[in-house]
Length: 345
Ligand code: 2RA
Image 1: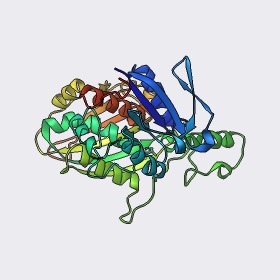
Image 2: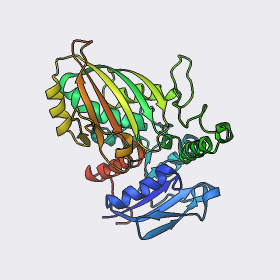
Image 3: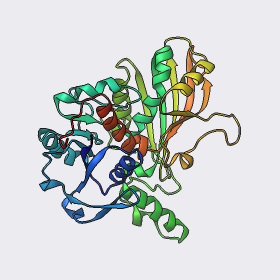
């Protein structure tokens, strides 16, 4: 059986990665359509090494006959088009923040809560979590199963690709500008401060309580995906890295958990690669995780400041596991669980 798949936001960082991931994982797509806003109509995007897709207009596309929509435009665009696509009979896997916290929309990381997928029937929409949440909950899940997590303290080091192609261009231009003695403010649009040779403790908008929305997302999404009782406090920081988010995660548990038990559980868990040698090259950094599927866990150690605690470092490609790969894995899970009947069959 094969499926008709539409990729919305096909010219963006995540849209392109979604197309690539569909090919790499040999998703049974009989027909793939690339959609974007009017300004991109007629542009070409690669679909694997051999195929090129011409971008079609999202505004006029008829979603009838489409089985799956992988959607990664802006949140406002998704708010308008995802319900239309769902009403036309497609299952929408939406990468924006718009639907994530709606109670009748499942928020899914296949390694963590695949059973939640069944809830898509209510709205026809499944939300893909925020990139920084995805990699953290993949690593937390086996630990939570072992000793029940009470509280998580996390600091993120998020790459500029999380802010789209414009964010990557801004880092490139500012870095070049520094070397040729041009003022960096000439290229400052996406980020609130200079990003080249700097770090910025501000991702997404500020909220009334002093947290940023990115920090809020990490807390509420973790609770929705993993356990509503887990307390999460996050500090989210943009760093001058092109691809790959890193996180320093400290976890307090309800029950005893040894470092050895945690390490064994992480090693056995799906989607995780433990690289932790306590030597100069014995941990993973964003530069090594770009283009990879796994969530890498390194620097696992006991937190001696609480009764039952651990700290670790975790790194993942934010465009892949943090976005496109997770979305395609949800589509695979829909097929595996028997929720999809190809309209073409
Ligand atoms: C970022 N979390 O890194 C966003 C992308 N989803 O800015």
